[in-house]
Length: 317
Image 1 (tube, rainbow, N blue to C red):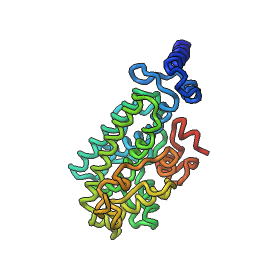
Image 2: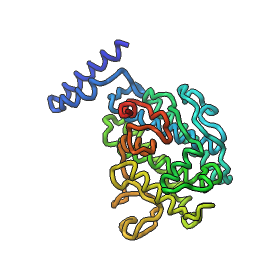
Image 3: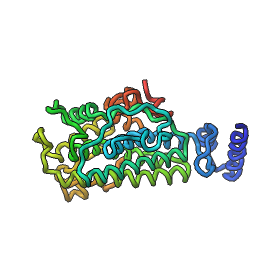
Image 4: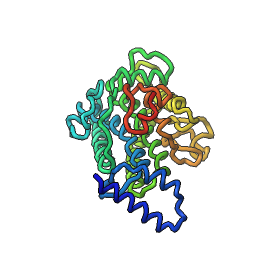
């Protein structure tokens, strides 16, 4: 293991020489000196900050893979490629969803896309075992009740039908894509930026598909609750804004007059800022949302024992 460390020293000296004194020594100290002996795919040297930022979204990718695969197929990563789990604990509460053939086809594609994302990230960083995940109907039902600020009777069950599944799906991929938007400008290497751009593209497409399918049903009532689909999505987005604690970075399918694209529509099939650009979120914001606690230091929600990776572990109480 001495060779990689020696190589890092040589690389640092060569880069410093090529910079001719222009490169900031402090940046070199903060990044390359923190290198811990990991080469990304193709033998590319990754600074520790890039490794951390690439490992963190594994938490969300594990979550999405398990939810979509269980919903569509009736089994998760353990039934697809157990090596991808890293020996992590089985998720809590996964089950087959009662979906129409069309929605099951969409969910199946999402499932295998997430499997691909896990493979792609792990080809670039070591990663960590699948954390304990709670994708049970009980947990997701509590999240919807938290968003609606009421107790639902009967309890919301994401596996009960296609509409409920799509509403539950609305909760997850968007959080991940805002994380990729937030991570991209912090990455130092082209390899890491290319990976994140590829992940962001597909996560954004998944979110767009989910929103489009829900938008088509926007005026439909969610069975037993007498609440419209668009209203439910607005409540979920408001909850994520509240838990993220950094202002408005989330919007439902319908917005107030003047708040849609260029202020011209109330329809809001794709969420975006005043310039229709994707919102960004930090790991702290994301953890507060997926924990359901508003705090990156207090685990809960989808991650009852907390998320993994240096960033997440460093923020836990």
